[in-house]
Image (cartoon, rainbow, N blue to C red; front, side, top):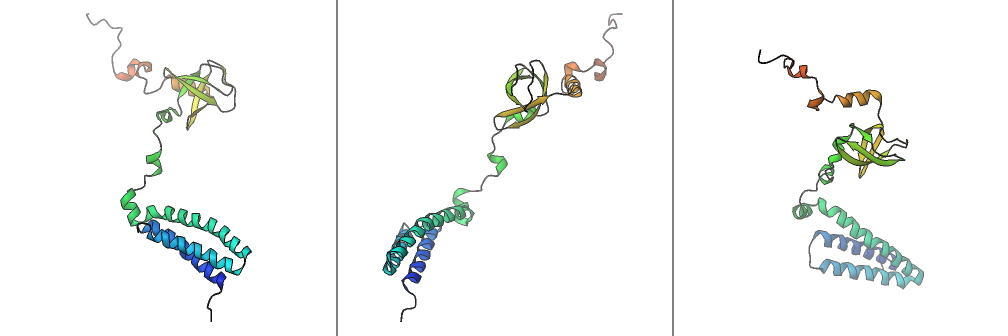
Length: 194
């Protein structure tokens, strides 16, 4: 009396072969588990071909999909295992892998368009010429612009509002543009020799 027909054995051997492949990723066996996986997968196809050719070809197609899927699953899970963490170390966070972009500090700064921006052009900010892209609005040369976003290699700008231009003219970090009275010094008009 046969417990499983050839299709049942073919399914069991295919699952067993995929299981051996996943185990090979987690347990270094020098290829022994890979050999058992190969034997089990080939055995599953032989058992499927015993039934008929269509079933055998169907199992071959399933094996072509199942074997890479099993390997991908094992490789995806491996870094989360104790052995994977010991070999690879801690996985860096997203912030640690992002490149430092010094231009990100420019968001909110006011500059002057140096060329016609349809939509890209040059912008002068703090004496540095930067390539920028407007937000769909043509900007004439000499017009004040505000940096609204830095994404990848693009600096996005929009025309500045009058109040933004005035606040940029008297920036608190620009010491030379602040009035002398803010520093607590007496007027320099007095003659110091008298």
